[in-house]
Amino acid sequence: MLRKGGDMQTFASGQHVQSSYRQCLVNSIVKAVKPEMIFLLGAALYHRSSKSIFQTLSVGSQYMSDYIVLVLLENLANKEAHEWQDKIENQGMPVTSIVLTMCTFNEWLQLGHRFAVKVQQSAEILYDSGNQQLQFSHTAIPNDEQHIIEKHWREGMIKAKEFLAGSELYKIRKQYAMATFMLHQSAEQSLHTILKMGTGYHANTHNIDRLLRYAGLVSDQLTNIFPQKTEADKQLFQLLQKAYSDARYKSDYTISYDQLLCLTEKVRCMHEVLSSYKRVKLNSHTINHA
Image (tube, rainbow, N blue to C red; front, side, top):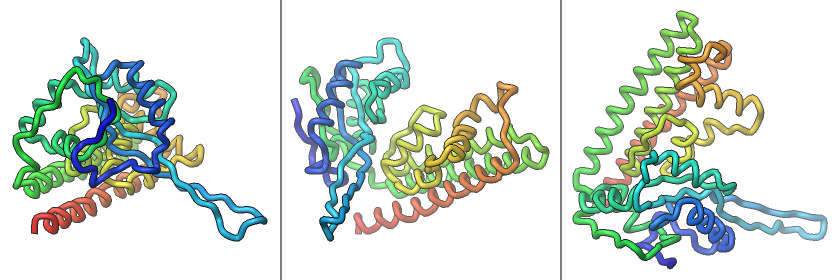
C-alpha cells in the first residue's frame, strides 16, 4: 500500500522520481528485510542535458537517485541495525538506509522526538505492510528547539576542535597515523553534530562515508569537501575512512605528511560548514517562529 505522509513541504519526489526505479528499490528492500514501513527521506537530484548540431537549445531533464530511506522493522532479530542497513544497501541499488524497529519509532513519536515527528509529518511512505499502525505524536517540535540546537552545536564543536588540536600534537610528534585517527574523530563529531542539529537523529556509527550520506539530508556542502572524482581523491578519503581502526591497530597503515595536511584542511572545512549551518538553522528557526 503506497500513500503519503502529512504535508511533504520539505521534500517531495513529484514528477522527478522515476516510478519504475522507485518500485524496483522498494521491491528489493521488501525482499531483503521484510519491513513494516519504508519512508523516503531524501534523494540526490541530477540534471542532464543534451546538445547537437541540429538544435540550438539544449534539452534538459532531471532525475533522482541515491535515495535515503527510513526502514521500520518489526524487530531486529538479534542483529545490529547496521547489519540490516548493510543488507539493504548491498542489493545493487544506490540507497542509504536508516533502520529502526517499529516499537522504537512509535516510542519516539509519543515522546515528540524531532526526527520521528518530522518523518510522520513530511515523509512520503513508499511502502506499508498494513500490519502495524503509527502512533500519533503527543507534541510537535519542542518550543525550546533553538536551545537544543545551540547545545548540540556547542558540545559538538568543542569536541571537534579538541580532536583537531590532538591531531596537531600528533603531527608535531610525527605520529601521522595517530594524527589521522584524531582527524577521523574530529570529522565524526562534526557530522554527528550537524545531523543532530538538523534532524534530531543520532546515528550510532563511526563510518564517515555513511555519516556524510546522512548529513546530506541537511547540508549539500559537505559532499563537496570530499568529491572523490579522481583516484587521489578516493585514496585520501579512504585514509580518513579507515583511520578509526587501521591507524591504531594495523602496522601497515601509512599516510604521508602532504596527505595529512590535505585532510587537516578538509576537516577544518567541515568545522566551517558546521558553524555556517548553525547560523542558517537558528535564523530559519527565528523566522519560522516570529
